[in-house]
Length: 309
Ligand code: NDP
Ligand code: OXD
Image 1 (cartoon, protein in one colour):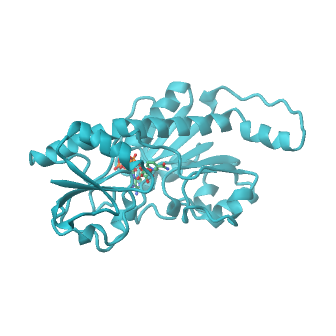
Image 2 (cartoon, rainbow, N blue to C red):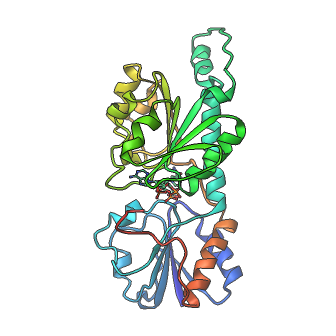
Image 3 (tube, rainbow, N blue to C red):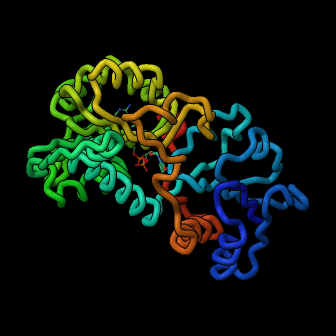
């Protein structure tokens, strides 16, 4: 029984230690050291090179080290008959909620405007209204969106969320489907994108959508780069439809040095760092799926490939 670990973004030794503590006999191989590919049963991966998983002749399950699996689904060689499980990890959720709260508070407390004032040595008192007067809207009410929505509501913000299927969430006004998108957007002074990348959500953050927000709204984009039409964001910021944007994910990562986002005064950038897994927590989640795999029980968080997430 061998597990292949593939990720340039995670510490392989830490993961191997965590996995071995739970499964002392597990043969954990770190890409690119495959050994004999024929005895690899499970792959634990983040952004595996296209074609790699298809080259493992006896692979039986794919466990993602990320919540979003769009890049893997984009690989036409991805074996169609294998279960693909995404990561649902409390440490990933906690860090994403921290990020959303951090940047929502930045906008609510007008820290973005103070930063601009400072650049011009401008002393200007700005006092925020109570948080209940700020409506924060979350696109995507899944594992991450729901946790962020609850934390924002607990902080006193007025919170709404939008999902594909209807939801009920205490303290959160829920909207669903394309028919309710306009109504959802109409009050969102701060819009957070926590959608998975699918055919339906590609390019969803475009100028037409920005125009349906209240004037001078702020965007916090943490879903996937291809959901944002980057040129439209610049037009919306320069045209005054949006007052600022915090962007963590991009169509091209790393973001090229000459990209206009780097130097735009109303854009704050983080390098796809909004949330991250603590291996001691993530390994427990992975271990539960490995136990299920060994015992031939149904795996958790299997991606619905037709739906795309
Ligand atoms: P989930 O699958 O739990 O939730 C996805 C949510 O999006 C669901 O509420 C779903 O609706 C909704 N949704 C999907 N498609 C549509 C649509 N067409 N219209 C309306 N709503 C839609 O995912 P997670 O919350 O775990 O993760 C969300 C995404 O966050 C990931 O896919 C990834 O891209 C991104 N991410 C980014 C990270 C970063 O560091 N920047 C880290 C981790 C994740 P329904 O509930 O009805 O199915
Ligand atoms: C994820 C990510 O999808 O880190 O987990 O982007």
